[in-house]
Amino acid sequence: MEKVTEINTWADCAADLVAVAAGRKPADLVIRNTRLANVQSREVLDGWEVAVIAGRFAYVGPDAGHCIGDGTEVIDAKGRYLIPGLCDGHMHIESGMLTPAEFARAVAPHGTTTMFTDPHEIANVLGLRGVRLMHDEALMQPVNIYTQMPSCAPSAPGLETTGYEISAEDVAEAMTWPGIIGLGEMMNFPGVVNGDPQMLAEMAETMRAGKTVGGHYASPDRGPAFHAYAAGGPADDHEGTRESDSIDRARQGMRSMMRLGSAWYDVESQITAVTEKGLDPRNFILCTDDCHSGTLVNDGHMNRVLRHAIECGCDPMVALQMCTINTATHFGLERELGSIAPGRRADMILTSDLAALPIEQVFARGVMIAQEGRMLADCPHLDWPEDARQTVHLGKELTAADFGIEAPEGANSARVRVIGVVENQAPTEALIRELPVIDGLVEGEGGTCQIALVERHRATGGVVNAFVSGFNYEGRMAMASTVAHDSHHMIVVGTDRENMALAAMRLGEVGGGVTFYKDAEEQALVELPIAGLMSDSPAHEVAAKADRLVAAMAASGCRLNNAYMQHSLLALPVIPALRISDLGLVDVSTFQLTSLFAEEPA
Image (cartoon, rainbow, N blue to C red; front, top):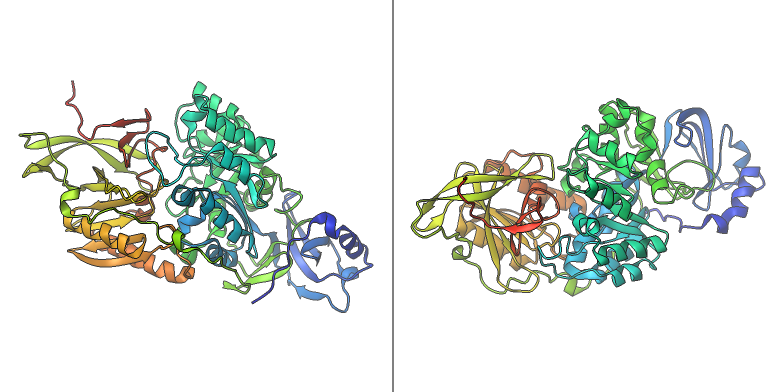
């Protein structure tokens, strides 16, 4: 495995940078005969060359011959494009089902050399200690992984119960850690709008530290509430799904982060703000938000997003800026990364096509870490403590009776609220369905099946039951997952209560993950022993198990694109319209708990 250079500050190696650029000292690495994609000026410079020393660019110009000495490694690019390493502006490592080390190993061959990560998933399970574990492993990697301190655990106070809660004091402490770049997405937008003291204190601590506040305004309201949220300090937002969303954010001085994850397809509908409306592209950033291991292994990471933006009509150099220099500038790192320019970290990619973007060679800090899809550098692991692997506490043996929904006395049918899944989008619909009652219990039918949230942090034995539509499952089945954004209890979706109980108990047995049962037999299992969220197994092994899960879902009638990601977000009470929590059904339009049973229309 290649040994990647430790990060030297620009100041520490300025003398060497100057000496190499002037020709007084030989470079460590020179790459000749490139077509350099200069994202600073948005132009392709034929024949340009770069010289690297101490992991940073020293010379970037038409001829680096004067930088070559006896010990210099020289690479002839043979006219290929040299582009900056790709940056993901907003993402959650836990969504990949992988630890930071294994996530880095999975995405670096796709050209991602910088990530801005919000570990609020593990914060909900293990609190500040979990964030520190993620932060520490991130700093060990050969690529740049910056950590945003989670802001909202719980995401919606009073509407859910987490394993741990994040305080303003926790945020203040984290701002002193070396790898913290800012505050994670401020999901509690009603709290900001209403002047909640803790939300304002967290943002204030971040600003005092000179760092960036991440945004999350998941509401269509563009009235005073939207303007109040912008005034509170969030500097970006990734929750847009329409062209007008990206325009409105840019006009308020926020960066519009357009995401293409495993299940969120929000680039095509928003990038027209640049390609058709002509807005300044400097205020637009590409990101993934959530990508599971199957996507990473089979489809790619930020290279996938970049290609998609180009396919949507964006100029390749503009799209490249949106996942390099724009991202670095947003986080105050323009002088550190995001471009091929003197003094910056030597993170770069050689590719033979700027649009199709085959990732042929990847360099981080001046060392080739991947080639033709193969990782060459080591990705060190933390020794994750045992209590981080023992986080599923059910409190009792669950049976089919725990998943029964009693109907009003004497009813032959029941009018109920149903969570409606929307393909390729995070928001859900709030539906009303008339469902049959059999032996006193409400039963799903016609594409509507049961959903349950099982408490798993405090061993209360609590189960909340409701209904969900859109997965179109057939037969006697159940799928259970301890990945249940963001409080990460356990979500169980099924057509049969016995299978639901079996699936839930199986996850208690293995310490967390995702399982699929059909006719009382397990069809697929993805073990996620770390916090019930992540595996420290290699990405290709996790992806293979995830593929079996997807196949099991499809064999039971589910045809949704990346339905697992839809499943995992059904307990997130900060995205409209209807969600489930350990406290009941949540009407996100009013931020209040609501009854499962709907009243008859007037």
